[in-house]
Amino acid sequence: MKYFIIIILFSITKVFGQESKLGLSELLVNSTIRIESSGDTLINGINQKFKSVGTGFFFQFQVDSTKIATIITNYHVIKNTDSLNLNFTEEINGKPNYGSILKTKTGRTKNKWIRHPDVDLAILPLDSINWSSIENNKIPFYVSYTQSELPKKELIESLRAIEDLYMIGYPIGLSDTRNNIPITRKGTTATPIFLDYEGKKEFLLDISIFSGSSGSPIVLYNEGSYNNGPGLVIGTRLFLLGINAQSKNYNAKGNLILPSNVKNIETYTRIPIDIAIIIKSSKIIDFKPILKKIIEQK
Image 1: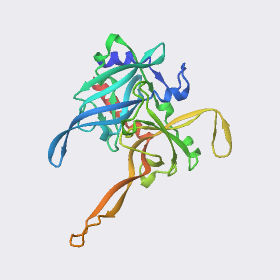
Image 2 (image 1 turned 90 degrees about the horizontal axis):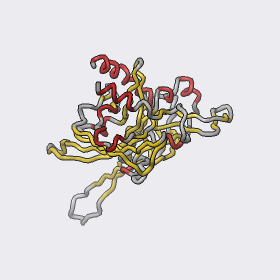
Image 3 (image 1 turned 180 degrees about the horizontal axis):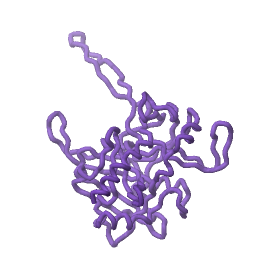
Image 4 (image 1 turned 90 degrees about the vertical axis):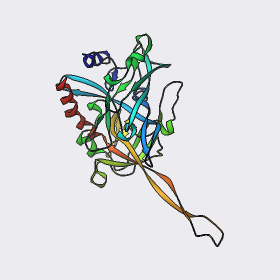
């Protein structure tokens, strides 16, 4: 019964494609959530507590006649997580009430996340969140992607080898904490989206990337007009193309200058080269049969 109640409670929440009092770009910056997690992990054989920040975004699955709202992120963001802090913006009259932040805290979350069977992704159904911590029955505002924003084969094949894309998230945990808004960054495809990088459902993106950006949605967003290859198209388009998973780094080798009687010591420093590995959004659909099985077991 709890699962059913949550689905009804949040069915009023915005999804892309619905009529809205907000512009498309403002909907985009309300589609992510900062994931603050803590737990225990083994470091050099010693159990140690950790705290981390990552990025999640909202996705609404349609499984037969049931709509299931979830948060999607990388599995490594929530691996070994025991507790989870999520801050939502309050909704008033269908719009975000910036500055009014609804704080939720969920304990023992590691068994509630659903892990993707073969890539670094995980989802958390919103009925797993401790909504009782929200005071005065306030309603959270967030915007969910749906399968309608996942690109079809025809769209992928029409894209140019080099496209401008946006990443929305929380690099080094950075955000507008007063208004609960993420950081939006722009990058360029480093490998064509219509090809699978190294034979995997991935592509590379030329963009500055730091810890905290894991799980960020990667979107193709054009408002007003865009180039589709043959010419200029008047119109607007939005597609969820992928999820940031990790970065490519360069190990810079150096030497310490020491007295001649001391053996030479080499040092290595990992330098980011601003290349992100993006998991293609088509892998999101792999969660549907898993969710269907969960629904049938309730």
